[in-house]
Amino acid sequence: MAGLATGAGAQDAGEGAATPADPASAPSAGPASGPPTVTGNLSAAQVFALADEARARGDFATAEAAYRALTQDRDLEIRTEARFRLAMMLGDQQHRYGDAALELRRILDDKPGAARVRLELARMQAQMGNLAAARRELRAASASGLPPEVEQLVRFYSRALTANKPFGGSIEFALAPDSNINRATRGDKLGTVIGDFTLDEDAQAKSGLGVNVRGQGYVRLGLTQGAELMTRLSTSATLYRQSRFDDISLALQSGPQFTSGRDLVTLSAGPTWRWYGLDPYSLGLGGTAAIQHPMGKRGQLRVEGGASHVDNRRNALQTGWDYTLSTSLDRAFTARLGGGLQVYGFREAVRDPGYSLTSGGVSAYLFRELGRTTLVGTVGYSRLEADERLFLYPKRRMEDRYSASIAATLRALHVGTFAPLVRLRWERNRSTIEIYDYRRVAAEFGITSAF
Image (cartoon, rainbow, N blue to C red; front, side, top):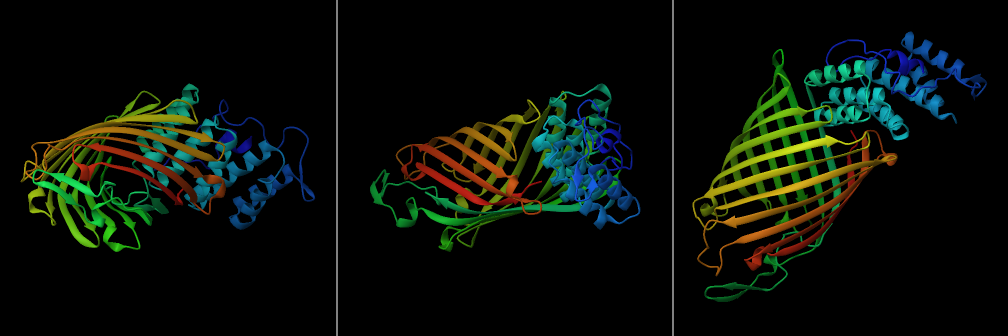
């Protein structure tokens, strides 16, 4: 396969360096192998020659039309070669990285073991600023088995991932039916030390149909070689017809990101705002530090800690400090299967010991690519304990929370770089305080950035 065998036009994520061949793991046939396939009145080989000539003289519209015609050929190897050459042209010569990633993903749907293609997908992901997705593809490429010269290329790509475009972002939008939008008890009574209280309707479990919107944007500024200033704005909103249940958050974080040996170190600080029912709920100001370390060829370890002072606008007794610490391990088992495990702890130290609490938990996820669908399943458990009993309640607050979810991204139905997303969530929180004891089932039907 000419394009896959020679690596024509391939460059590093940050520098213009040609990439070595990957004959051991790329699809092995090309347009010249086997009997010629005719596209219109031309053979596939002739259409490839026409497209390559058009690309060489800068006539990208003609080249794209010819390559796309070949992607409809009945021969899988011809379709694969056409998509690869098209992706290289879209990415390296037209800087249409999202479109290039789509074509490379289509190849991997048919040939998940094509390590060279996966490396190029990682490079396109890096050019779009999707560093986590780029590193995931590199781990998947290593899991598929690589010859020594290609392993060297993976290491080179891994070091180059910080050289990316100066700005970018992503967004997710979904309709979200929910059996318990306010995570409240289904009971209508609350036991206290002075008797039972009748709960207001808004304090009881309420179902509803909402809209979930999540998004982020970033700007990066180079400082020195191997270091940059990263500024990120992220938001999350769950909106309902009854606005008193709307939950909106906005965070602005900025700080340096740099490499130290094989590790990536990120420091950031900034404010976080939250509104509930469209009224101010809290304002936090703090920072985080994270270090990311490769674990062999297929794994990645991340340790992150943070501290934030939170001013609770609804209840001054809940104003204080939040501390977080987490460790996560991600690993690719095969080119299409991977997973991860996270252990985390949280400490909230506020003015009233009854509201001060400590919690910790563990969560695990597993993803699997099935054709042009990506499935992700997660399970989690956490334990929470308050420092002291609030004077109104007969018991100190203690909780066990269980959660599970399954999500499917349907890339076969993509529009541009967006694809449909279906997600189902389940939660069960067992608490010694009735008002915090709840069950919840929720779903999301929407669109998400496919890359």
